[in-house]
Image (cartoon, rainbow, N blue to C red; front, side):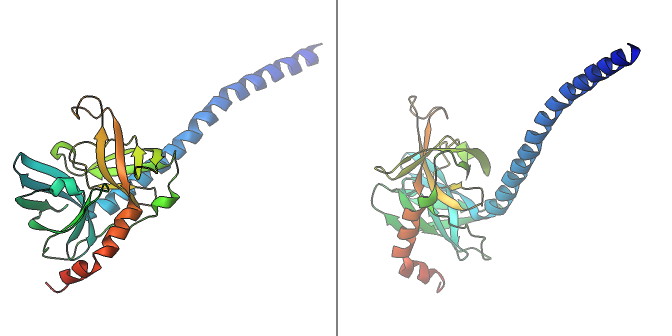
Length: 237
């Protein structure tokens, strides 16, 4: 009788120990995944930010602020055309705080809202890496870097919410606020898959509660290819 009770209580104690240990395993596993993702975000940000610039264009209404991606170490920068549209002057600030006068090199005159401007940096600049926007999938994790409301070098994260093939837009829930236009939408390899363009919301862009859009980067690559002759002229200046 004593032996039977002893075995019975031993089984109860073992069951209790197992029940307490199982939740611990469930909690621990996601924490490792979260730490790995956090480390990935940090590495991407540190690698890409030196190739991102802030743009301030003087226009009739005041200052049009945006973001740009360095595509040539000699000073060619990809941005949104609406940032520099009808600009009287353009000031570009690199990630190390150096400011340069910018000039428009090319503008894509269609709904893709892209432009290339140039500066004359003192030293070669770091450049972005292009991905393939045709491989983008809904639900894919993405990062956006920009200068919202003048807060330079801001990182936001989200997913691809929708791909609008008719309008040639990538929709994302990563925060894209005024000042982020022209900045990169990145995959987890640190490759640019879109050029952030706008946020649509019901309160006339007074908040970041809305839908963010980016131009698929393959359209930007085609645009750059069409302006190769102008790009080549940079190296001769």
